[in-house]
Image (cartoon, rainbow, N blue to C red; front, side):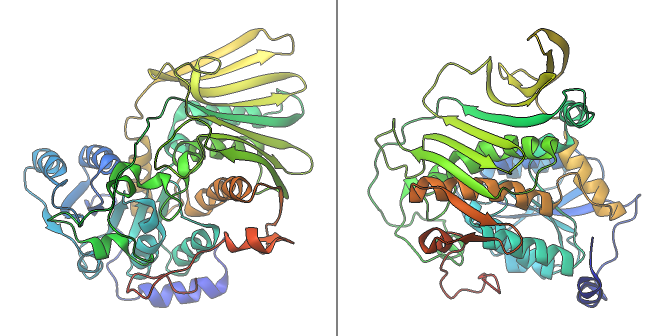
Length: 424
């Protein structure tokens, strides 16, 4: 709920800005970041008949060709390229920004966009750290912006049916959920620092972070495996499934987190764990996260899934064999009693929901508050991995209790830069 203080501040902040798009209008969108996920976003949003994409924002002119071609073909007109998000923020014709940048830009970009009166679709995970995530929520609320996080399972009908079933009570008392992320990632090798490639605005790419030398293993697809920029695979893939578990269990954030995370397999430049076992203790229930990034085989037939255990049965939802998403129910004897599936990919459910909410001003299926809480689980798991010990968490204050070293990982240090979030 938006409190009165945020309502008044938001009303002032958005006064005189472009009205919310009417149901018959096209929503004007800028694609920001057109690498791997950015290409998927170009497909999703470019396929929607009520979306217009006149702008692409990216700091690397070497990667824009594919998306430029896709958008030009989908709308019959070439978009304009800009490298500086400030040009987009100043453009009153832009309703929304679809942000598929590297993770370290998610929070700064979202906050800047909200303060400029833009709605935001931001890829997962929400933030690099817990403090940033809260600032994203605050920015959305004080500006009355629609901010949707890219945990697209929330818009997937089969996931919604799974959650509805778990919450119906048919499994009995649901005391535990298990999330697994079991797949084969690749060895990224070791690379030396090098000069910044031609065509890259490395200062804007770095944003508010302390600047490091350019290194291809800390750039594009491999940037998330370095603590300075990313959260590892628990934030990359794990957040989708932790979110489903938290949603189905009706859980917020835990009071205690324990377990381990380590690099056991890869001998390369990756810093983040390839192996994790993390337990989230809510007092009356548990969520357990298991990660192995060195398995070509799957776990119970799925590389990513959630199982919720009740005293009368068990339900699973996951991606089986990469070809479909499925929701299964087993009774208290282990017999399969229900199977409900739909094909992959996701058929624009999540992008459609975002655009509909931009028009209606209704909360999206993956509002930034929910996205933040699920991302907090990833951050807490990483803090356990980095400190090597269990932690206690005060959800109201969003602080780690009694552990100064762990508490320092709740936020981060920034350099002086125009994109540095206020209040960090």
